Amino acid sequence: MKQVIETFYTALNNRDAQTMASCYHDDIVFEDPGFGKLHGDRAKAMWQMLCKNAKNFKVEFSNIEVNEHTGSAHWEAWYTFSQTGRSVHNKIDAQFEFKDDKIIKHTDHFNLHRWASQAMGFKGKLLGGTGFFKKKLIQKTNHLLDKFMSS
Image (cartoon, rainbow, N blue to C red):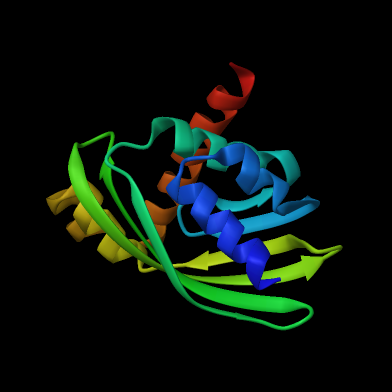
């Protein structure tokens, strides 16, 4: 299962959403603070959208630990946030569950307030730690995902 995680993050660094999707089970459930919970094709499409739109993008991953059913990894992403042109360095801890030699559950944990401060500057620093901000962000990212999937 370690190879699946390595393949996934190597593909992310290469912006290869097709290979990333091949690491996911058809019944994948993905969750993070920026998109909320995504199921199946929506989770795969989210990575397609991010890979397609990524600017100055780099990923490094480490500390992969796996057993037969679960795994975890640490990964860091550097990129330019397209809406503001600001540089972001996001530090993420991921947890995985496996089924049929694929990832069936993927949960990313990161400090949303820290991310918002980097991505949005003063406004993010001011509001990024609030539930209101998180709710609005998830609405916006899912709206962008809907538009991406329908195009």
